[in-house]
Structure formats: structure tokens, C-alpha cells
Length: 135
Image 1 (cartoon, rainbow, N blue to C red):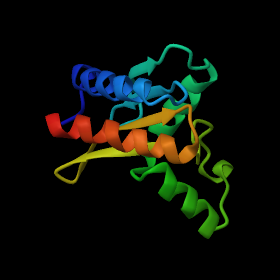
Image 2: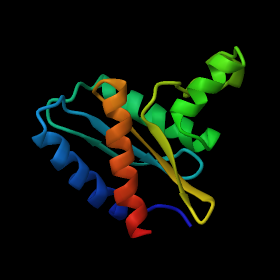
Image 3: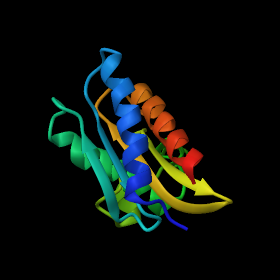
């Protein structure tokens, strides 16, 4: 099983609509399949173009590592590792990326970028909840 772009699109637009009403900065949402291949990208009006690569990188990292980018970041710190140690130039340790798990299986991952890291994490969690409800 994997996530599909229609499910992600609906969840994203709902999350983006709520985010657009809270007065915060516009963000970029990305979703990848279980292998890290991009399946959906949404950039809110006014969101800087640079956020695209960051959101995609967060989703990609979460998919490839199978953990949130928060947990991955903590691993890097705890084990005194660097991103270069993983030999994948698409990885990021910025919080705001989550794997999507259904029945213990990774079905994809998502990333959000554009606000303070804590806000990216909160929006990412909301986005994930909306996707997983429909699976």
C-alpha cells in the first residue's frame, strides 16, 4: 500500500486552508512515496521558492530513514554523525518531516517548510493525521 496524490491533495488543501487563516507565514507541503519519490507538492501563495527543496528534502529524509526528521536530527547529535555520513545529498535534519505508517508499513512521508521549526512540525502532524484518516 502507498499513499496516492488524490488523498494527499485533499488533506493538504484542508491543512493549507487552516494554515492560511492563522496569520502565519505561507508554507510548502510535500509528499513522497515509500521510496522517497515525489508524488505531491503544494506551495501556498507567497511562500518563497526555496521552501520547495526544503519541504521535499524533509519528506524524502523521513521516507528513506523511516523516522521523523526530528528523530533523525537527534540521532545525528547523539552519535556525533553528520549528514555526509549517509552519502545522500538529499537528506536534511531540519524538523518537519514525518513518515506515514499504516499497519506498521511505511506508505510514504511528508514534509512542511516555511515557518519556525516547531510550527512546521505541528503543521506536518496535522497534515499526516488528515492523510492517515483516509487510508
